[in-house]
Length: 87
View 1 (cartoon, rainbow, N blue to C red):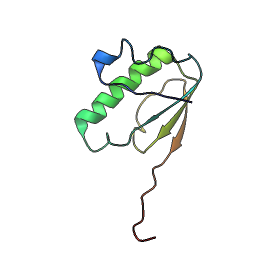
View 2 (view 1 turned 90 degrees about the horizontal axis):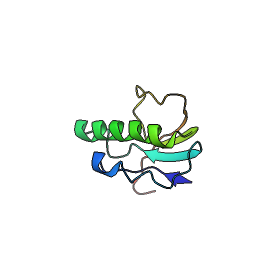
View 3 (view 1 turned 180 degrees about the vertical axis):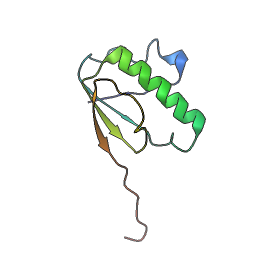
C-alpha cells in the first residue's frame, strides 16, 4: 500500500515518483483540519496527487474534506479513534 505525502509545491516534482498509476493509495487528514493554512496545503497537494497518480481508490484516514472533489476516484473513509485514558 502506498501512502501519499507531500511537502508543498516544491515537492510535487518528485514526491509522487515511483507510485503506480491507477491503483489504490492512502493518505490522511490528521493534523490539517484545525489550521486553514494546513488545510489549504493539503487540498493543493491532494489535487496534485490526483492529477499525477490518478488513483482508482483512495483510503482516507481522518475526518473532514467532505467538500473536496476527488473526481472519479472512489474514496473509502476511515474515521480517527479517540484514545480513552485509564482503560
